[in-house]
Length: 273
Length: 313
Image 1 (cartoon, rainbow over the protein chains, first blue to last red):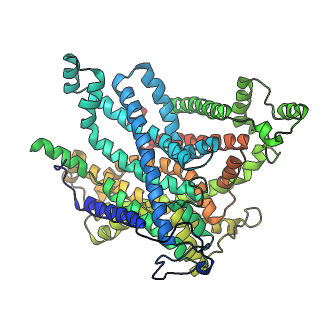
Image 2 (tube, each protein chain N blue to C red; image 1 turned 135 degrees about the horizontal axis):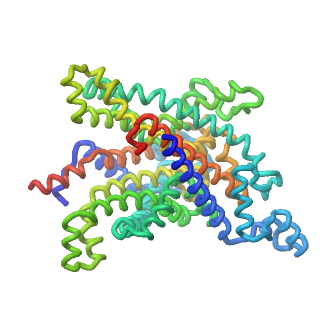
């Protein structure tokens, strides 16, 4: 993996992500509790003890942002794992085998693909109730169609290549062809998909929590922090500012990391070496 | 061309039927009985039976599905469980609001991103490009509801251009209604503008390095002529597809943006009916949004045919 060369954009992206990770982890050093209310501190602005200020219950916003970001990232992380697993599996099987099953699954994927993931997640939550686990599963399912679509077209392309035909000829087991032979060759698309999916998950999670459907109080996520803060935007604009800034910075970092085609370059370079 | 459009239209109808079936099936399989939810545990069997009769729940599954499917054409989606009035009358007003907001946002995206995209592509590496590209990257990573909050703060509270939460119904004051919707529309549009500019610029640069562009140069075209007469037509195609996707996405982001600007649109009623498990409303609304998305993709296909004759084959 050390052959992957990063361009400047990705370097900045990595640095931002690293800073965000440190920011979240430093939450463990922050002695303020995320749900301890204090009526003396209600809607107090920034101070040395509470650099981000305090919310309408006198809770420390810095700590809540750290916890909230941790939760947002954790939810997105697990949803991406769920979505990636099933998306890759369905896409790989469809693309590799083709046939009636492919036609059938592809029709369903196309229908689901037409429905935006936020709506899918909303429907799912409406069926199974709101909460952290439900949102994780809902987002995971919501990203399956787009993932399956991408992987399917990649596998379709790879299937026709010489090395797959050779592997079939010498009777390599099918599962091995799919996961050991083809998968590393589509890694570039795969990684880009993962980053984009992660980005979308953070966005969708924030959106759902903003609507009050995701993480339930007293726990916080970036979306619910912003939704709480929205009501106090007149009297305490800093309540919006800090969570919003950290959310934007996080998305900015992931965006930089997923944009551009340097993964492609890194891999095409590998063949030249 | 007519044949292609008819083919796409038939495909649209088939997708619509599949989607409506999936939506209906999902809500059918949900655990829990809406009748018991409404009446509570102490309901008498007679009351339960009467309500079942009233909501039409004791008819067979397929019959109810066909009623639901016909509802798309007759605009009759049954009665809301919570409000007791017909779903269509509940949603009619909301759809107008959301349609206005999305169309306005779409118009903003097209009006701003096309000229800017072409301009940055033409002046790649110049000063404007160096200013716009990082701005683009930043704008893309701001979620639209955060942008909505920032717009509320800047234009609503600091500059006082509009009153936050002061939504006016289109029935009382149509221009006031449009004016209020400008702000949520911008919140919806700005991230999409950034994506559009980037895509358009990339496509123009890609097309400009192809053989036919070099030939056009050799024939004596200058950069401007090449750009407008040859490259642009080809480069616009993926952007048209993308704008179709944006339109679909806007209805969804609109759900969140509505909450920020307290616009009583589709989103508010969707969230309410989800929390009260008012399934006829949720079903009808999800179907409406899906239908909207499908129609948009149909229109995108038609525009493709008009711009690019090769698609017809």
